[in-house]
Image (cartoon, rainbow, N blue to C red; front, top):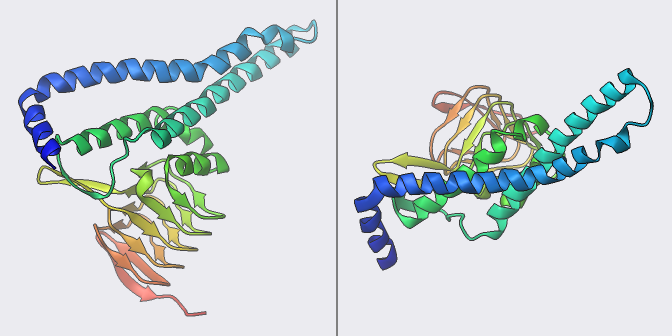
Length: 248
């Protein structure tokens, strides 16, 4: 607590300089991450002659195109692994809580968000939904059950997310385990039960709990700390309970 107070006072005084320094530092880190991710693809491309098996311009052109595509996906998978294991192994993921902006915990949260963007905005969309994006979020720390369909890349603070078996997260939906209010960062878990359906382009805010077999309709907004019971259907902005599903 005392450490946080000292840190906050220091950051408040030098924030403009600190922001610039951190930005430059993260660009350097991003170059290292992308460079490491590109290494397997470059090795594969440097051995392209191995794939040119026939003395045919058309065949070799097709093979070359496939090889370039393979290099792209090799880079992408490598990037996901590096980003996810970095966030998994380094002690930089802040826990649930309320923190002042500029505090040490909020800086850690910002670093985690920047790392996630390296993968999310570069490659993750290409393999969503699939077992690969499920593995990616699990490595980071999300608790995801069996047979889950995760058709979105818009998951902020995935280490605070729990999704039960058989649930479907619709395309373009967003799950935020954080919000910023009154100069404070609020981090709270989002729990989605078993066999739930989260409609496309819906929005879930931190602290929400969704019971088993419930539905959040398309383009609905579930406000912070909302509780949905089992087998309920919610819709609207803000979402409200419209009816309870059959008990069968």
